[in-house]
Length: 410
Ligand SMILES: C[S@@+](CC[C@H](N)C(=O)[O-])C[C@H]1O[C@@H](n2cnc3c(N)ncnc32)[C@H](O)[C@@H]1O
Image 1 (cartoon, rainbow, N blue to C red):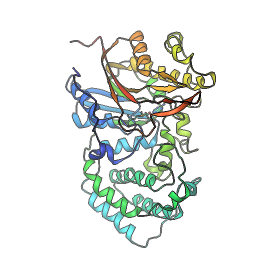
Image 2: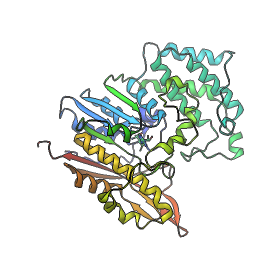
Image 3: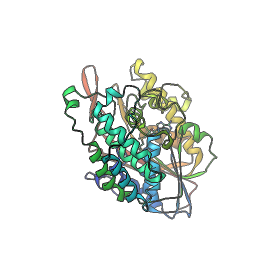
Image 4: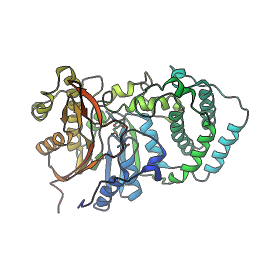
């Protein structure tokens, strides 16, 4: 089982649905597809969960493969929820031509529309860009069919980001130089219309066997019954968002532009550009403490990190152990983790070792397969931080760990 190569050096998501919308740190779709394909039919109905679904790559691939999968997904980020729901629900093909035409007509007419506003909008968008995006926002809001309207929002998020004043070289909000801002060419409306036309053929799945929740996974998983999931497949964050991947900052710029009626919100998400990051794993509040086993597992890393950097790392790891502890409680058969090992203060924090040690010590799961692959393209540079003025390398390898429960026969 699972005897294949996962290098995928030449994989380019440009040719599939996952390339139609940008979201940070995506999984490699064909890898998840190959893994899930091995599980198709091992049970008639496979209860699947991705508790950090992000842009829904694993969940979409599961839905593509088989209706055996009963799909569940959680993410704290409303943009991730919207993208995943749209990938799984698809568009309404009966009305898409009409709806796209309606948008085109509105954009080419001299209509009245409200000019959108939110905190610091003029820092992140040029005035003429605000006008064009406001007109598109208004036009999308007039579409009655919910599936098509949400598809338009997803495509719109790429356009929002492309014509914003933030740099494309990083997921953090980082203002471009003034000359780069003034040289942005405003062909926004035309670009948006072309994208909705070009990408719609990818959104034809119409899966009805899924439940995608906008929630904090650590809270949600604690409320789930023991063994209520057959296969848990996910790529958790590998550190707190602020010092690793700021999913929240990346998403908030787009979230501000989408009509609230089409987002699942608790109400706090838009308090600032980084609230989602603060509320995510390892965020600004300490929720869990390390127990005796957990301390033993991580002290070889944490003891070597400077004290002022240790707190954040320990806070993240305590959340991570809570995730693992709930995972082994709610999962019956397989746990599949795509992981990155990060470096803090020159110390490589091996989430793969940490996960293996904890899961094998605390549960009925054993490691069945371990893959690694080089990450060919990265937005986070390979050399990121400096220790004693020397550059140190960041995360360059990605790992996939497959655990199997000892209670499964054969
Ligand atoms: C590595 S990304 C997942 C990427 C995804 N596998 C994909 O291919 O697009 C991790 C995700 O965890 C989410 N996340 C972080 N903390 C969370 C929490 N406490 N509850 C739910 N989701 C959380 C982030 O919003 C992010 O989407």
